[in-house]
Length: 189
Image (cartoon, rainbow, N blue to C red; front, side, top):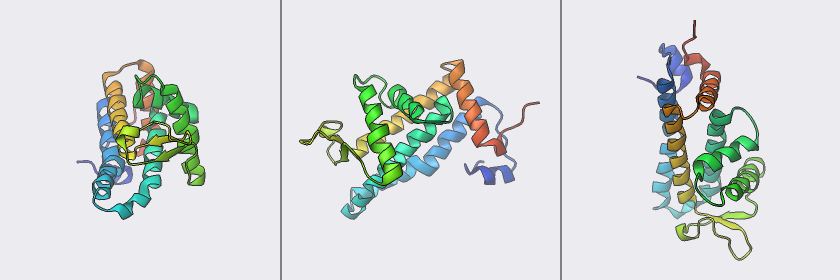
């Protein structure tokens, strides 16, 4: 049984050998350290308005989840990988996916990560206004909807890797996984 904390799993002798084991490990780890805690946040938030102050932090976690997962998609790096992941997995069929990817990178993710603020957007609890402009032309982000979109993106991405949608996708995933979790990856002879 895995703990999904690589150092503990290494001490227990865990060695992941094939792609399916690696995808399952990352999926379970993401659920343990990001998805399930955020689900709990939304459960508590519905009953406690004081926790609303964590909205920027929660938005930051979702954006950093996208950043982290985008490195398994396209490798280490910059906003291009983040934006490609958003376009291909968060909003794959949306007609304005380019605009959304740019907004999330430039005005949400980067501003939150480097300055604790959001520019040209705002968080509001209103699913009916998600990604609609307000009177000041700032884009409204319904945080719970954004979280659900992220969860679906995670599922779509990991499904594509499992299915071997492309050789490049599988190679990028395995290269990144082997680099990040090298302590629990079985060395190839």
